[in-house]
Image 1 (cartoon, rainbow, N blue to C red):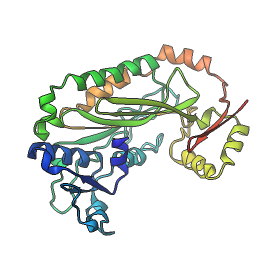
Image 2: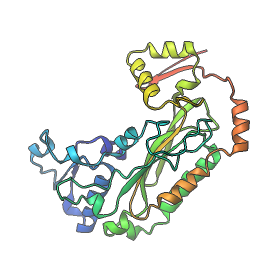
Image 3: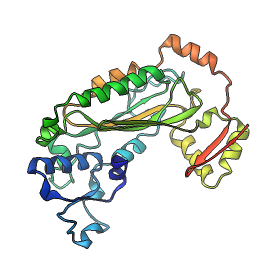
Length: 299
């Protein structure tokens, strides 16, 4: 929750700055900047802040800063649209993890010779994409491994200078397609030692035409459906909007190639994909819709 609040903030207040060391304060500032480079960071003591600092002017450094984690994921949501000349296999089984699904949106400064904390301490990001389900057990093992690595970091390193405290994976989030629940999209989040996996609404591609008609009739849902069709739909293959789309943020110790290899191993193999496709052929999702904590289900 804290990471998501930072991602969407215009201003982040670091209070009680007088109670930590200079190294710890620089670590916190770099971490905030790595998660959301567009946010204005204000430091205070005893809550003593200039009210004007909480309302940044319309034109400030955020207009040229790197995108937040939430924006990075959204900016890379045009799955199936190849812009880099990469292999584009639409059999709903080819991984796009090594194609145009990665960027390093957190390595830029303010555009005027400024060096941001994210750039100074080597914080970067990439987006992983694939059009094949994760084996649920292997994906859980992958997540468990991330938590174990974080637990293995000495406590002193986390309290030390930014160079050591910000090393490795710090944040990950996105949309998952799981073999154990193929009809529903899942939202995955990883921050610090906390990982959550939440089931969402059915994939649009898993809905019948009547289901889509009823679901799109709910206020605001037609626009969401149109956006999904335009930006996240497998236009030539049979996946529809079913996909993996995960953004990873970390420091110098985060090795993109290693993470990609580990998460690639979570994808169903060719043999597993054949079994999965056969078992889920023509299976449609029940009518379900969850908005603002209100859930509806029919049939």
